Image 1 (tube, helix red, strand yellow):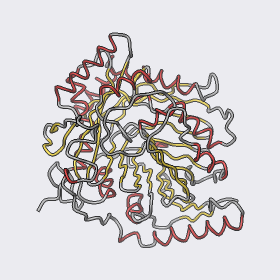
Image 2: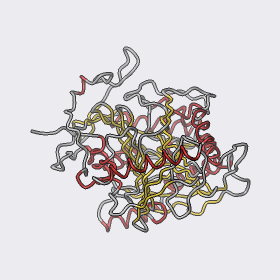
Image 3: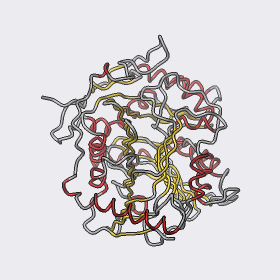
Image 4: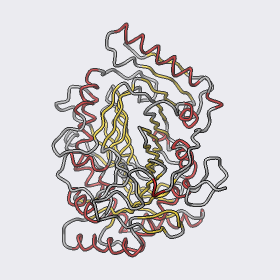
Length: 502
């Protein structure tokens, strides 16, 4: 049966709808705050999944999607034409370390926030926005019921519940959490030194210009680590590796308020939000990971960055990026890596590169962006949604945030970065009941738990890298996130700690 569909008149924005559904469990948002044609055309919100799966710590050789595959196989349905592509299905977060399911990989020695390696819910309703036509709909599938009458009854009930919440949205524009932030040292399971093996705490350093933000690297330590990666490159171990520093701060207010702050300070095409249990993912990512539409796979790696300043300076740095041998080489390496990854699941001869090293502008930086496409093979999967999960196995985590060759780069990352990445450099994704798939790479992303907020920034290191420039690039990339942390929930502004004053 087709889903029940109701078009919304005077629909709330995705941010307003998120505030309205703040009390619903496991709410997730995919929002195009910065729109780039088809890339930013749609946004989605859903909550209260009828099934979910969580992997706290993955194991090599164990399929992380086994339970999810069984649910999706029972609930396959076709897309309703003329509506936004996600019409219900799986949605969730995959942490960077989930790559250990498919390759034997070491993990960093320490973990701060202890977010699961994967959490995925299966949702039978969604609010979908088409920003091009300025329309929005509630789509209700009625799953997990499969018998027609029961499914129709559930679909109608869910539709009624959702529209009832939306009927009062004008008074629910912001979150309502006023819980004071606990002192850093008093947070359960989060001592002032990060979670670590006994007797070996992670040393933290004040971030220059932000005395209440700490990092797992100081400047000199980051420079030395960049130099160590260059030594690995010169020794022939790798061509490139991504190095990042992990920042910690505090936030007073709800995670929804944090998302609202981030989307305003750093608007992006692939913004997103997911809240589960006592943690939340708050993202304003500029980077598509992989998407599947009508059987075509697309990925858009970002490599090459310059800080934005004035309009005149932007013109100069745009030309500088276009002519930078170092940045172009960095980008092309990852394009080659991703072409190889996609060849494992795409039809022979179907992979093409329609865009190579094009400059795109974002709120605080300009990037070199490429695009790779291929025709997805169905293979042995019995449904389109399962074929999309096979794609994740082939390409996760993204090459743009690992390096080349990927496995050796990830081994070096685990050696040199003292703390597990968690959701950072993982993915926020949805996989529709019809096999439609879309995902972002979780950069420009805040992870919130217990009043503590973690954010990370990094960059690709190649043989030509200048350690000082690489360190400064991480600060440029973190700028929008630090601005978000410095904004108070009531909009009055505050210092960089994120603590409420007065």
